[in-house]
Image (cartoon, rainbow, N blue to C red):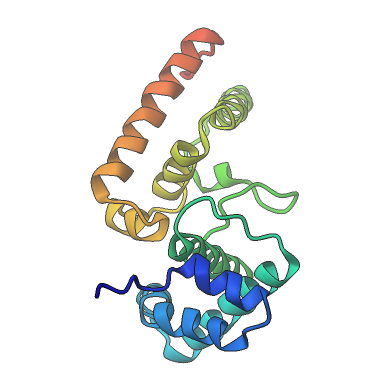
Length: 194
């Protein structure tokens, strides 16, 4: 007789119906993969353990609140939560550059261009503003890869690992991001040179 294995969705349903051990089984099922992913990025066992716990606290709270929607594989959703918590940690610790603009930080401050005159500085500032606005038009995945690559100085291997895709997918997203940026520059008739 062939017995079908219990799916993640079945375990979630049993947990919501009051079976606490289903949640433990779910966590045990994915613990090694999630922990290994976190440890590979943060390279600190204690920090990885903290982030792992934070990940599953968020998972449990989301499931308990009824907010979890089965839109794909459970493990991919958990890995995305872990990925976001890692990025939040690095932002707070200021161990990697912040990739989003705020009042205190502008991603274009990382660009070093020798400025010879006030006029050139104004033109460069305007170009940066225009590019910033254009990046916002890109699809989320393309925008993410472009920002990680150019403003986070990340390799495509690291980008692929952090976004849970293959290197070829990361390269493809970057290629399409650049193609789309060129189209946007032409459409909006923006001049990107001095």
